[in-house]
Amino acid sequence: MGTLILAVTSLLLYSVGTALQALSFRGRVHTSIAITTLIGLLALTAHGLLIAQTVHREGGFDFGFFQSSVLISWLIAFLLLALNLRKPVQSLFLGVYPLAALTIIMSLITHSPSRLVPEDSYGMLSHIALSVTAYSLFTLAAIQAVLLYLQNRQLKQNYNSILIRNLPPLQTMES
Image 1 (cartoon, rainbow, N blue to C red):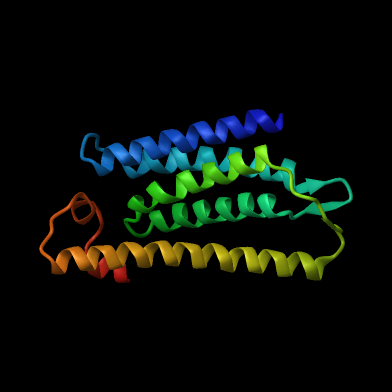
Image 2: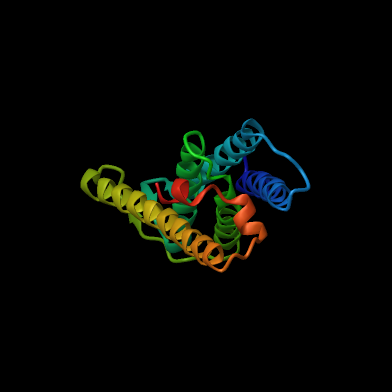
């Protein structure tokens, strides 16, 4: 499958997921976790196949800036989708899906110089895998911390906004 077809497919699915979450956030539509999970899994599949085509080259792996950002955004979306099965964190999809779409667009329109990491360099590949995982977890924690701060501030000011109505309770957010 072509890179452009996979990119357009994942962009379309991320757009649909973002639109559904935005409508659900505004109270216009009621989405179930099954629909959110299905759209997320389809988008992750297309995104993952896109990564396989853009990062894996003949002779090694290309971990340029934009290729790495696509990989990181895929892992962030994957972790959030996995977390969504245990805790109600659907509101975070409003930030993660557009981020993933933006990284895909940026990787398509820009070309960074490539430096191939050989396929048999297991130490370097494990270092890259661990650092990408750590960065993805750190990004999710940062997004969660910002939402927690906003929620706490609005609760203290007795301001009942859309954010407060749609986020999980404060104790759930903290845990």
